[in-house]
Amino acid sequence: MALKNLQTLNWRRLLKLEQYTVFGLDIGSSSVKIVQLRKDGQDWVVTAAGAAEIPDGMEEDKTRREINIVKAIRKCFGSTGIATKFAVYGVCGPEVAVRCFKFPALPNEEIHGAVTLEASQVCPFNIEEGAVDYQLISNGTDSVTGVLVAATNKMIDKKNHLVQDAELNGTLADADGLALLNCFAESEKSYTNKTIAILNVGSAFTTLAIVGNNSLPFVRDIAYAGNDIIEQVAAEHNLSREIVSGILAGSSGNETYPNLGDSLAKACKKLITDVTETLRYYAAQEKSTLVEKIFICGGFSLVKGFVGLFNSNFPAPVVLWNPFEKMRCEADRTCMDVLQKNGPAMAVAAGLAMRSI
Image 1 (cartoon, one colour):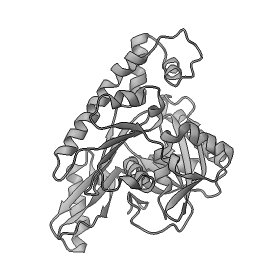
Image 2 (cartoon, one colour):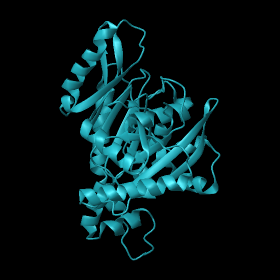
Image 3 (cartoon, one colour):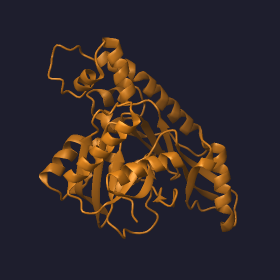
Image 4 (cartoon, one colour):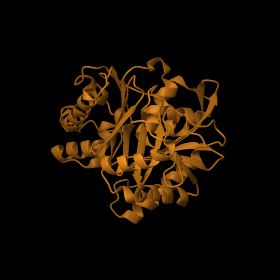
């Protein structure tokens, strides 16, 4: 599948076996994560991993911010010792759309046109200024069922330039939500045919990815995440964002600051509401079932008490998800330390690393 000449978007890895060695590159708004994996029979083995903060991640000047992101990519890549430069990167946000479709039986030559028309009707941006790709999924009937993904050319070009400026090869692109589902399907096989949700809470966006026994993915990117929560807590206590981030990360080193537990709960209400409404919407869809378990990951999932807040607000159990707990690591001690510290924050990078070219 291709977005502007990039193979992409295969959450169940339905295409070819690996032909080239690649690595997953997750370029967030505050940090960069890289993971490289190797398939060993039915299992995945970690061969390299790295993480690097983006200097002045909230820099408003576009040019300076892009320079900082490129520096972080280079630093992260350099720390891993990875030899290949083939990167699989992720995209998310309002310029990316993931939708399922179902058409009556169509001749093969008419499917592309039907998918493009469907994308023009359901995507929140002008599809003529973007790229569309799709994956058909067998449903055992005469209908045509599958998943389409669309992204703006602006988004793709932006990510490509960042990767190229870091002297890497942006070979593939994948939607973050599909990368999460791919990673989960490969590492948590005991949940096959069960309805689960993955909540990846980053700095700028929260990605909610759901899959049920119909095997069709549901993905929604929510524009409320860690930065918004920190901003709200900081404003309530008249503290800087940096101080609040340090307190929530448990690294402030100063016990004179207030306990932010109540403020954190208050700031998370909007996200909890958005997720709740999305889960209700999903359950109301045809042939959908109630979510049995919610797996939380992403950088903000490591904040003390965050997962507990969600667990107390949902009927389904909510747990912190670290996909590397079930993977063997053949990398050095530095890599193992990165995974131990940042495992849940690197789930998207792991899912990207499972793609093939």
